[in-house]
Length: 168
Image (cartoon, rainbow, N blue to C red; front, side):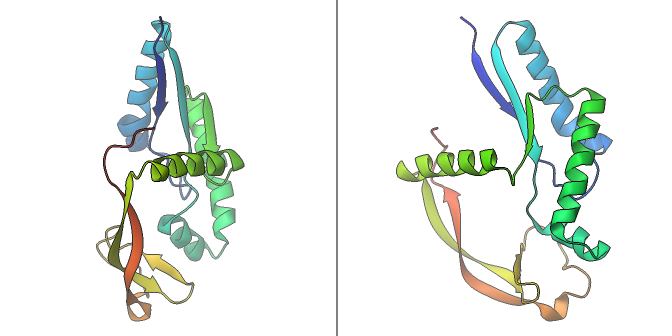
C-alpha cells in the first residue's frame, strides 16, 4: 500500500527574488525527495507558498516608497515564476494571504490548542510607534536605519510556544 506523505518547504518572504542559496538549501532537496517518492508510487503532495507577512516586507516597502501589498504582489509572481522555470514540482504554490491558507492554518492551530499543545509565554520586544509594529529582537542584530530613536521596549507581549511536538 502506498504511503501518504505531505512535504512542505520553508515559505520564502515575498520581498525579493529567489536565489541559488534558496534553491540549493530548501527547495531542491525537497523536490528530489518528492520525485523519488512519486517514482516509488507513494501518494505524495508538495506544497509551499510566499510568506506575505513580516518585517523584511515592511522594510522593502518602506525603502521603495510603496505599500507592502505592492511588494508582496510583485515578488510573489516573480518567485512563483522562478520556481516554475527551475522545474520545482510543487503540487500547490500559494500565498499566506489566501483564504485557503488562512482557513487551514486556523484549523490546525485550533485543533492543537484544543489538545492543549500550546503554552503562553511573555517576552520583551521592540515596538516602533510609527508605523505601529513590533520589531523582532532576534530577527536582526542591529535595528534598521533611522529606527534607533523611535524604539521603545514593549514588555509582556504574549507569544505562543509548542508544549510538545504537535499531534495533528
